[in-house]
Length: 377
Image (cartoon, rainbow, N blue to C red; front, side, top):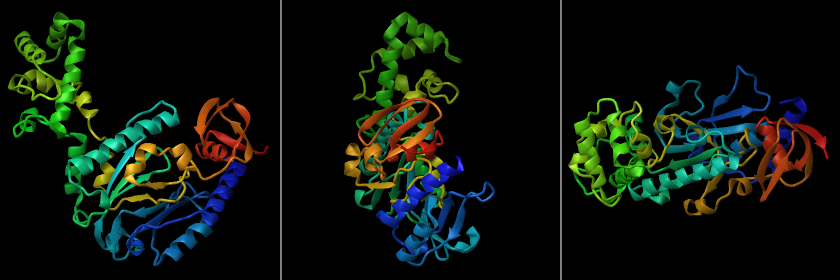
């Protein structure tokens, strides 16, 4: 980012922080804080181990320092400003889930990526409240300002969980280590992972049999470790499988073919089963000393606001409208390559080189590193 572009973005962030509404998390005085600044040197990427005694102190720091990124700890400490983690006095941590496009989808336009991530977030919310029994009252949903969503669970009953307990929740959400026989030992497949497994089986059956029985049998026999006898028996059981509302038979569940289909080394059923999961970022949830973005702050990689959203409003939330804080004042930019970009309800088709765009779009493109400021229009 050129100096003029850096200063343009910093000035816009300063304007927002001085005039916009800012909020702080509960138990502010027990949180560690960390910031990245526009003039940060590579060897000092983040300034952390900071603590604030009041909301006014915290917000005054942000408004005077104008960070490009603002974070606070999901953990609670007795001495959050201590210089080492061992001296901070950990007393617990919020349970955090992160749905991020980095490990979901690549190579698509930004708006399409955000739509896909929203679908995964809706799936996660349904699993947390509908299957795991978490109360929506203890749940806070946040658009990260970048490529995903965070779910903060502030239920006092889980605050003291260590990484092991948190990993068990992630394993359930992601469907890690599913064993078909054990999965259906206590039910008929009407809900939860039983139903998801049946849905995945039905999708696989339809795909396998699309080319006919002979082609399906040949395909199964071609799998490593699958002979003609096992392939034939499995195919007959698969043809008799009724679908997502039906429990798979033991002939399907116990077949060596099933083990091959669920193998981590190219098992064909495994990705279909994983597609039924809520693909949360496991390290975020299991890290009991994580720093997370501050809602109402700005994301230095996009210029969008980190927005807390009532879970019931997620379906109607549009980040490229609802998380945009800058306006339509015209700004001249120099764009690295042509693109089409929706923002504030309009789609802008831009050419490589000089373009005149709304300030909101200029900030976004400069923060993304694909445009430099070219002066006012």
